[in-house]
Image 1: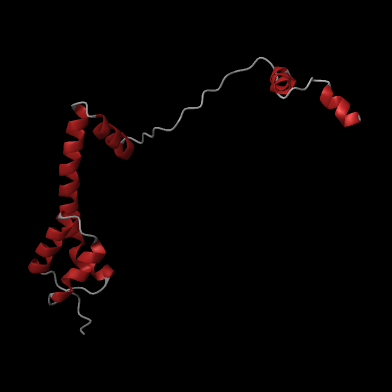
Image 2: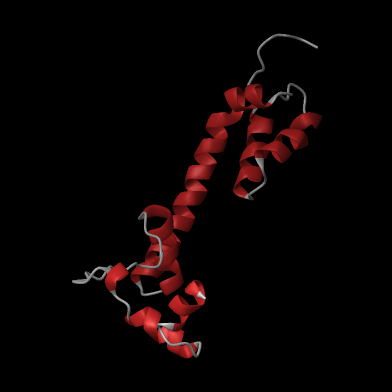
Length: 133
């Protein structure tokens, strides 16, 4: 095996571009091109020699699909709009917490405790008697 730098092969580049266009993972592309002469055997060499080819095709594919999503969103498609906003707009449909200002101290509000005690069939003074009893 030679330590000479791998040359860019048009045959391999075309195969790489085709597989990227079809959504094949980089690891699987690297494995698939091993049958070609001068195919890089390591991931780092693969990226050095064919990284630009992969980037160009990926940009084309993402641009084409993105264009469709944006157009659909602009036409009122809710799913397309949500996808775009989540991925490119930083939007997330998390639940909103509404804070309510209280004039009273919640620890001093005994109404909730009294209601709970009544539901349990206890008088508010029953718990004090049980503690002392």
